[in-house]
Structure formats: C-alpha cells, structure tokens
Length: 101
Image 1 (cartoon, rainbow, N blue to C red):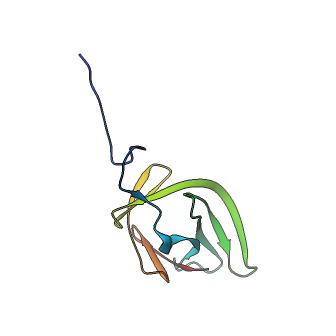
Image 2 (tube, one colour):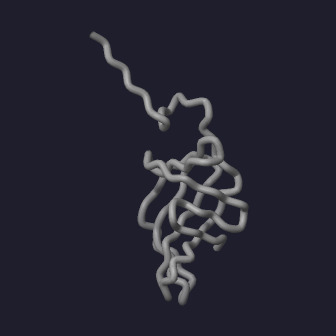
Image 3 (tube, helix red, strand yellow):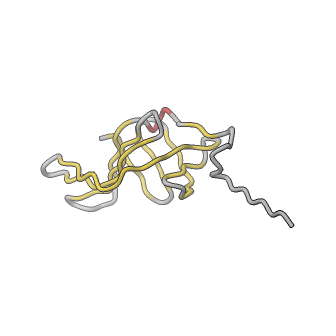
C-alpha cells in the first residue's frame, strides 16, 4: 500500500509568490510602549523576525525566516500559515497590524 500526503505549503506548489508589498521592515502597532514585534521581508523569500525598541531605534534580530505568500491571502512564515492583507503601508497578519518602519 502506497500513501502520499500533500499540503498547501508543498515546495512544488506553483502558486507560491513573494508579495512585493511585503518587502521591507515592519513594526507592530501592539500598544506596547517601547518594545514591538518586528519583521523584515526580503524579495528572495528570506527575512528576519525579532523585536524593535522604539526609544533607541534598535532592532533585535532574533530569528532568520523563510516566507512566501499564496493567492494574496495566505502568508507562510517558516511553514506556519497566516491570513494576511497588505496595502503597502500597513500589514495585517492574523490579529496583528504592522506599519512600515
């Protein structure tokens, strides 16, 4: 018996994209006073996730990430799937809103 499995994040998927609206640095508007969630998305599907300290304009780069988008609706970050929307100046990932740094 042969069993095969597939998922939305299969590397051979032809609908993978790197949404150009995401390229750059993004800081969460999370209501915190000094330290905020941070993402940097590169055009080659790599990036950085970390934290941003607003009072000293400093990024703490915690994790290298791999990312891609599917159908301008789903954002995959290191294999985890999120609903997203981006208009170029704000980015919504799940329940968080990010703004260009």
